[in-house]
Length: 432
Ligand code: GLU
Image (tube, rainbow, N blue to C red; front, side, top):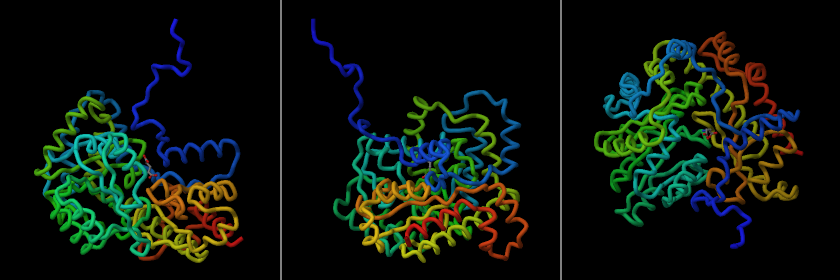
């Protein structure tokens, strides 16, 4: 009789998946929850989840639509696709109609399917969000990280993109440009967007503009790069960040007519995989994308709170000797601790992963290491998601303060105590 294989012979993992860990954002969230359940005091700056509740008008719409039970069209509910097209016309001044929109269960899933159907290299600046590269890896696409510089706030500069494209001009490429940025909070000026658009057009790069944080530009001044490169840009958005509905899982892609072939190929894969996005959520999303006064007020208070908190936190870190760009939107900071390399080395810390682990262990502040965003292991960068506060409470409190007045230290102490405490303990830990 043949000897039995001790490791089960039937368990064979695809090589592209073998050894891949769970996504860093979700892993840190689960670890933080576990530590808290064990009684540890954890300040949760790991997962980037909106602290704000879903606007009441959108929640009400979901309640009214709880009975919606039928499968919806693969590309999405017609009414929602129309509302998303109108939204982009209003916000980004790009000409779109319902037939240019694809709805999915989160923009993350849509990004995966885009990478699956498009045959070309994935181009992403370092640092970039944790899941773009693993998705390319799972599918088997080449990943081309474009290095950026700390003194440019880690943003992709047109000459850096030009250099990469010129090295092999006719190579098919998909560039993901995410701003306001996860993990840095940085954004781009109109001129920079125009210059990036020129390079993308010259080399016919397919551009995925990940604008999921667009509405969280602190001054409400987000500009879509699709304005300057409409024929080659897909705009990615969804409910997760600006509408506080990460767990609802609803993402949107908007395609120019020139890239309709990609939408169609994605819809085929969608029809064979997720079928269609949750029906009640799609009906409720129509309300969110239609906008109106309630949504505007909600957004302007959200931006105001995040702006005050992001600025305060970055200032505190700078005072402690850390390099950190001034955030322009979203809810992330990407501090670089290399100015403190010597004292950190004396404490045995030489990599971002060690830094992240020791900080969690010694201060209870949960963060993510720069390596999760494609930075070198020995660079001392971390991502902080300053979202550990009760957003519902903060929104109510902010409404009591006249709009022309900045939210001050007292407001932040009262409404965002955990984030303020994180700033305090990090500063003390660094100065120890
Ligand atoms: N985008 C969020 C983050 O970067 C979490 C969502 C996710 O990774 O699926 O923390």
